[in-house]
Length: 245
Image 1: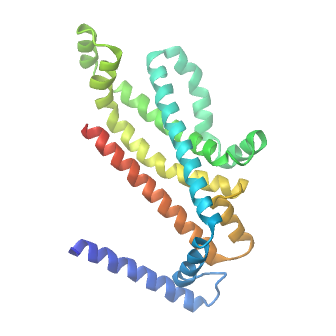
Image 2: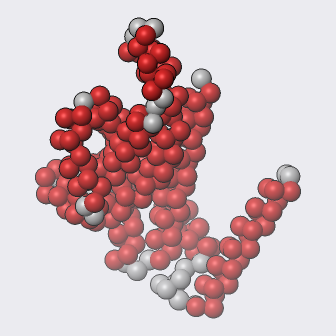
Image 3: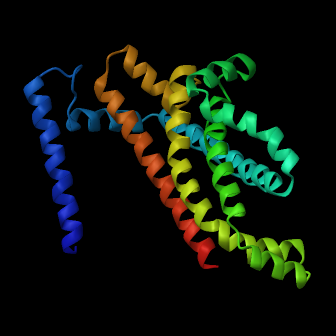
C-alpha cells in the first residue's frame, strides 16, 4: 500500500475508535450504538433474503428514477432550446417541481400511485430540474460561430448534436449528473421512509426507528451510503468514458 492509502486507513480507524469510545462512554445503545454493534446488526441482516431484496429493489427503483429524470431533463431542455414557446409553457411546472418540498410530492404520489413506485417517481422529480437547467444553460452557451458553420456545411441533425452541441454541453451536464446521482438516492430513500414500501431500505430505516434499534438504523444507513457511493462511482466512470470517446 502507498502512503496515501495507509493514511486513509489510519484516519478511518481513528474515527471508528472514536465512535466506539463515545458509545462506551454513553453506555446506552438506544442513544448511540457503536460500530461493533452496528456491524453485528448488518451481519444479522445479511443472513436474510429479505435484506438483499430490499437492497436490490431500492437500487433498481432509484436507478430507474434517475434514468427517467436524466432522459426527460435532456429532452425537455432540447425542446426548450429549439422552441421558445415550449420553454414558456414548461418553465412554470419546472419551477414548481424544483420548489415543492419532497415530502409534499411523497404524499401526492402515495395518494395517486401508491408506495410501490414512490422511490422511482421522487428520484425522477429531483433529478429532472437539475438536468433540465444545466442542459439548457449548456445549449445556450454553445458557440454561435460553430452553429453557423454547421449550418453552412449542411450538417445533419445527428452530426450537429455529436460534433457541435455535445462537446459544449458536456461540462454543464457532467456536474449536474454527478450531483443529481447522489440526490436521487437521498431523496428516494427519504421517500421510502415516509411511504414504507415493502422490501426497501426506507422501510428498514423506519422499522429501526419505531423499535429504537439504533444499531439496525446505522446498519441500514451504511448500506444506503455504500449504494449511493457505488452508483456515483459508476456514473462518474461512464461519464469519463463518454467524454473520452
